Length: 309
Image 1 (cartoon, rainbow, N blue to C red):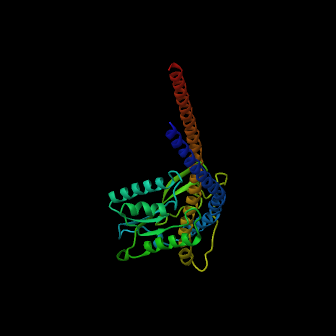
Image 2 (image 1 turned 30 degrees about the vertical axis):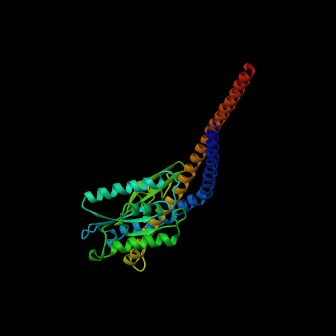
Image 3 (image 1 turned 90 degrees about the vertical axis):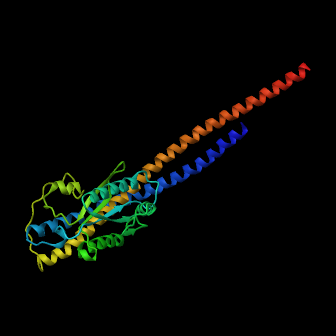
């Protein structure tokens, strides 16, 4: 019994240590989620302005840009999976990786040749463990992505899309990320970034789905524009900016989702740790009671034996 009591006390101490770690990680995530949520929402006005400008260009001109045209000269497809650098965020990274595996399988069944790009150490470790090669990886900034990393990802994927087929050009670019809705709802999503799908500036369904406008915004009437020096030059500048804004938005949404998932997961883990401590304490007390009862029984039995003799 004494040995069992020591085991329970050791488990209580180790669980208390884990509870402190869980609580610290929960507080760290809670201190960062506000800034991440503000960063994700503050990017929407710029994304909305870029969407309006691109829509206006396509409606007031008949230009066919390479970034908006379907490619049929190659079957290679790029997939960017955005995950976390660290664990302890619930099913945040696992959901993206599962969706990525499903997308890869569907593309291969349709005759495509997927190439993987990953943002986040969890995705790189996942594919490295399985012996799957990744064409590009970015790490270290999953919960606070910098503009430099966003631009580097967008430039890499855009250059691959614009490259000739014999130089490794790709036909499509997909981005898998987690959209942040609120603290309890983060939804994995798949977006086709290239070739660009240019939508009407008044397409409320698309703008609402992308989170670029709130539902209270009324329908917008397309104004008239004059482009200087020419629509072609403006479009050449706007479309790469449009791709960068979509990649940046996906990374910011993922960062907010990661912190929200980690805060929720650590709060649940902390509660579970305290429940385990209460259970182990109750078992330790029961073992101590049993030990005392055994000692008393032995003393009484000894006394009875002495008195009888």
